[in-house]
Image 1: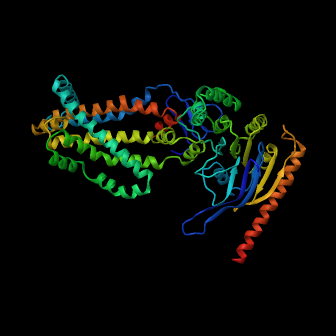
Image 2: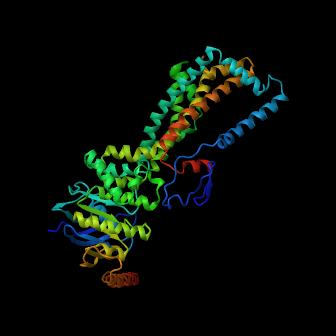
Image 3: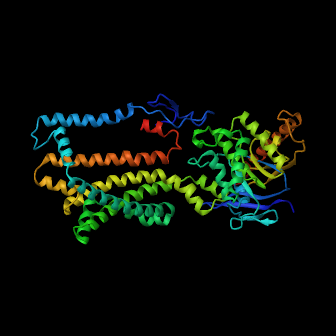
Length: 289
Length: 267
């Protein structure tokens, strides 16, 4: 987006991004809620569902069941306790793996970002790790640790680490040196330098990393469950696939997707909003993105 | 010995594969306590570097800086309360306006209650009393710079280092703030080093003025400005001073240009 374009968001407030810094009146941060944007966001999804439905009319339910059938199957599944169990098992593995990935990614990313030495040492390791298919980690960890949760969690943790490290590394590159200079000039303690100057600048990158970690972890965990475990969503997919039950395969995929969307909208989005509320133009930029 | 003594200060920056860049070349200044010394010089003449060295953020290549009887370096920063106003606001955008003024005070060990009173006082002084709860990015550039000024003043420093603090403001705001600035200086009697490249501003504000040459910097002119405060921006005496200093400044630029050409011709 060019900085001089005028951005009109749905609330009808026009924001000239060039003028934002120049005018004497403070820019309002709160914006009125509008129903138009969510509608726009979901219209594409609805489009896909419509195409799916149209396609299903021409195929047998064994090949491509329609959205209504899949949706009702999913709802049926939700009346069974086992569904929640399988979902929770997968969720636990995802969280475990994500935690490992976030910790290792943060450490590696910070080392790479803060020392040239660390960058030289680790860059190739991270890039190689990034390019290895997740399924390879799955196979390796199952061979080493057996068919259990440890293998799944470690595989997820290790496979998702490089992506997090890269995000954090980029974040450290974006730290504003002038602000560090300001902190030193005003004699900020080392601790305050870190907590009040450096970390707040890393927050958007950590959030981005968290998102990436979540997305990657889900994908890896299902693959690992599919190739070697006897519980979890990946296992259920495998099982129904073995029974050639396309409807159930899609029902589980749908359940999975909905869970992801809920996590994004009920947990990540509110956290992000809260942590970046100091950015008045975030809404305008988001609208343009 | 004067309050601040800059003694044969030299600063070079090492450059890979090239001769080091000489920024300051034997600068001598002594500043008496309570002075408002303007330092005027062409851009890139090492003024900011000098302020950094005084504040103990950078080390001199040779020479020394003695502040209140103690030599200053990055290892031994002065006990004198030093504060800074930068050319850009340099605010913590994720903190409110109040917090931006408050945090440096707390870092300095000012008590919470006292610190809060000062935040209010200095935000009022720069005309932002009502904006304490806003975030910097909600304010215009000029308002942000005023927050930065409040932050610098709230420290109530013994030595204030101001690096072109008004150069990014519109003239009306700058004029108002200069007047406030002089008033604060006159009532507190603290020492201020004020870097600028605005001759009129320097003449209006300072009790003494230093003109330094282009890189590597040496003193070109050192003069007292004994027009009594408070001054009026339209004062004829100030205007005459401005004219003569501008003429000197132009002469200096010409001389350094000649010198540069001469050196090129020799080489």
